[in-house]
Length: 304
Image 1 (cartoon, rainbow, N blue to C red):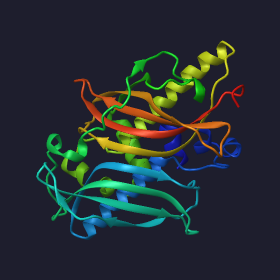
Image 2 (tube, rainbow, N blue to C red):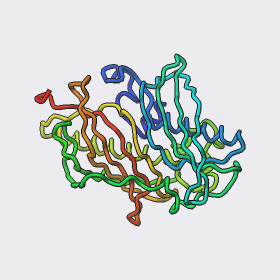
Image 3 (cartoon, rainbow, N blue to C red):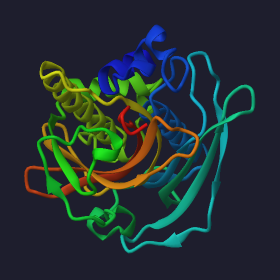
């Protein structure tokens, strides 16, 4: 859990027990990307046990309701909706997963968009024709800026930053797989059909890694000038996660992020909720992944 966070999501509440005590989570907790990847691997196993093939096309929503701690034992069940035909020629449905810890507390809810087949072994989906792989349209006018790391009330809707490139080389993919899958065969049907493909959950995790690296660089620049650096809080959830095109080992993806919406939190005077637009672009200028993380951003002390 900690090794994954150090590699992809190195925030204090994920990697340092002492530092985590003084955060909103009140202690060390797992990265949501780590938990999602582990649960997704189990979905693949369950579907194969049923003699079905499945491919994760997207995630409509991830709700994070309680922290996942070291030593927690998670369990849950998946409820599938009616299977309907998709333009890609396959069948599709949604799956809702409620994940609980050993105390029966709901820690996460996922609503997945799945391609379902009658055979546990089959070829890959025709991605360009799949309605579930279309990215959500951008709902704001994006404005590139060099100073997007600001306190909640100072962030402008549409403020955009290029977070940097990420190379999906063999080492980075092997590291991700080793940290998120108990057994090599739990890579899922899509990885079996396209053996050189990057695992789905590696893409948003790589976005997070680039975002935090960008934030650290900006924080160092702020500190050198004596400016206050706003803290990042834990994520509240994710919406509209779409894997638009396959990414293969050897590709470099450029990640971006922009402010889409700001929401006040009645119970948190020191924090605001920022809905972020996030995407990755390949070398041909095509979107390969898009999603909307919901992040807590510190308010300025003068405003509070």
